[in-house]
Image 1 (cartoon, rainbow, N blue to C red):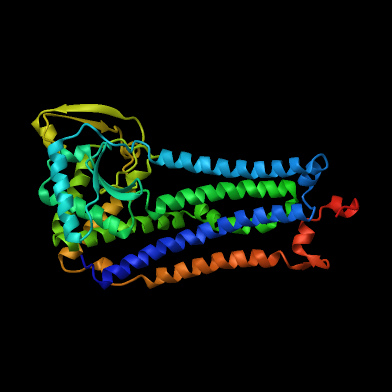
Image 2: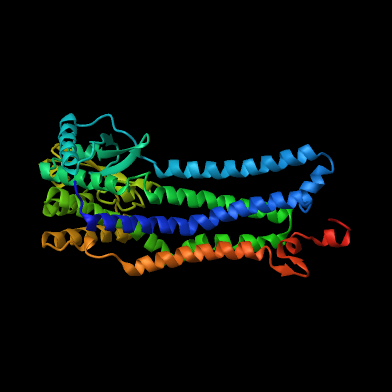
Length: 416
């Protein structure tokens, strides 16, 4: 499928925006980790690491082994925490073996049809045990796949609705923004791991060398600190990641030439989620990447069974009884998050504009955001350059590095 130069430019712009955000935060963190390791090695080589020197007085091989063991322990701990976080983010994301085969065949046919229209190979279709009528694009064994929930297979969705869902997920694959291969999941885990490693390394060099070297390691952590403190920037980060949903809708509408069907499918699934509140834990990362984002549910949860045709119809099911998870109470316990609601409203509004001939997501690039991205990258680069130069600033006839690693013990005790 020829997406057109406008669409390609828009995709490239927001992909570059995501990359810019990642580089702005990850580059200083990685720089801080490498800098702390270089400081430790340089201090050992110059005989300025009192901890290493103390151990080497007994045995130099033991000092080397202890240093390597500590670094390996830190790296292992950071990797362990990232892996645990990744596994926790995939909580309740599993394959379903008990599903409607006729519904699967219908969705498979819809996926094949839109794949041919988009001119890409048909990805694998997996059935997922997520308790909601939904779909998702994700990575499976190194390749892009499309998942549809077992609940969606028996929801009685029309052919147009199935094609709309599959076209949207395929558009995410074209964008390179599919679950677990997307920028956000990898970025969040990498930033988390780098942050832990930088903190551990900062503690190590502070204890092993001198507390003054901490002055060189604080600046690389500033970008991450800003993200953690500034709620507006965190919100902007989420919006940036979610913006690809609008682009995916636009591409899907262009592919199917039926934006109305896609809009009505989004509205139907949202209304359905209002009737059947499936409990998805707040730790589950995938909830933000579903075809219709599931809001996080909190508070007491209980299983309720409704019998009768009317109940089945309201839940979109053809069965005579429907089991759903219901979160009782007022809005604060139902936790219908604003972000999920606003995301659906934006997508519906965008598709309504497309129905009227206004391809709003393809009309122009956000030059102001481009300027902010460039400024952010420049700031990150400036921080790293300043730290490097600061190491060689003349202080008392020598360098700042020499002065910061010269402890009072070295000065008064005749040390090196």
